[in-house]
Length: 177
Image (cartoon, rainbow, N blue to C red):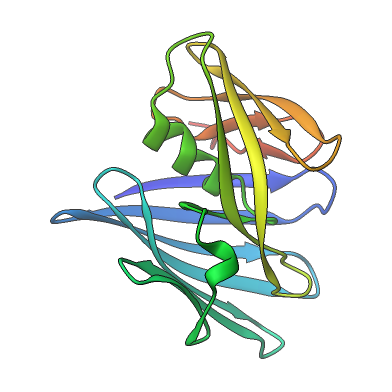
C-alpha cells in the first residue's frame, strides 16, 4: 500500500489516499476533507490504470456509483451512452485522477493525446463527458488542457505519474521525518 496526501490550494481541503494493488487490479481508497463536507471514495482500476468502478459518498448523505465495462458506462445503475467516448474518470476535487490518463497513455516527451473523461462535479455529483488534452513536456511535467474551455495548467508529477504540484489547485503534502 502506498499513501498520498494533497492539500486543496483553493478549498483548503485535505485528501488522504491509499493505493492498494490487488491481483490484476488497483484499488484507491480516499477521504477528502473539504471542511463542512467530507467525501469518501473507492475506485478500482485495471492493471493498465483504466477506470472500472467508483463509489463516492458524502458526509451529507449524497451517493454516486459510476462504472465502466464492455457494455458502456453506468451512473447509479442507469446506462450513460453520452459517456461512450470516455475511458477515464475525472474527479473535480482530487488530483489523483490525473494519474489515470498519464499512466494509461504513457506519452513520450513532446507527445500529446486528446481524451474524453467522465467528469464528476464534487459539488453536484453530476457526471458529464469532458474533452481534455494531455501533453508531456518532460519526464515529470504535463500540460493539462480543457478542450471545451480555456482552462490549462502545467502540472508536475512524480516518477509514478501522481501529481506533486497542480498550480492553483493542489499540492502534494510531504510528511516531515
